[in-house]
Image: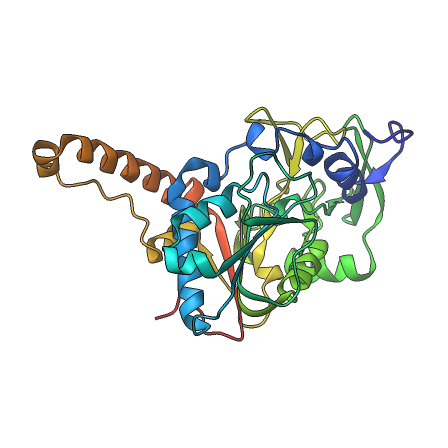
Length: 330
């Protein structure tokens, strides 16, 4: 992907960073993430509607400020920001200042009300929402060698791996605290320290309001023994190869990312709290309003997909209030 790096051995963090974000990298492409995988945002407009209701809760907690901010972090092509503006009540939408934060160029035809930025604005008063962002913040991979030592995994552009130096310093301390590896050869972990730092820096841009990050996640009790690093191309999971041809992703240790006052909810719980359920419409509606029944049935199917245990409903929501009460607590 990057000139001169084809035979170079590098840690996964540097290799993935170039493959995803360097000029010509995966996330610089015109088709955007939706061309390769389907997120909750793409699955149904019900997701944007739920985020809009969350923004309204934040608005109330803030005392209905004259200007309410909505920041779509790692916005792809701005689909969530556009959907939220569409779903908001007119009076709230009139006060909402929407930002889409993404490294790619602004897509043609994006709603003119959405400001396109490369970094989140500072001093946000409102809601910052990051959907499937942290899983694409590159991290180092560690693997236990035959002597029981956790070593950094090195990789070439073609995906070939070998073990490098022992993990030490802050990375070793992170592993010990958040993902301790027993001395069994072949066990692997992704060292989530860069994600913790990225999330802390992003939350710091919020003056008052709420920051939420949503992602594939695991917690200390459920760390996978061989890690989760994988690739996606054209809607299918594939071998992770850091050449710019595919997405590179690894599940997020959201419990490690959480700052004081933050907590992790499963998506099915968060969305149900925001009014998204998979309940089927009453059958009587089919006889009184057949078209309405079909529409309601379709919405129920979409809601069921978003909240399905074993699917999208298992995503983690890290909810981080900033100088307001937690909008998910009654």
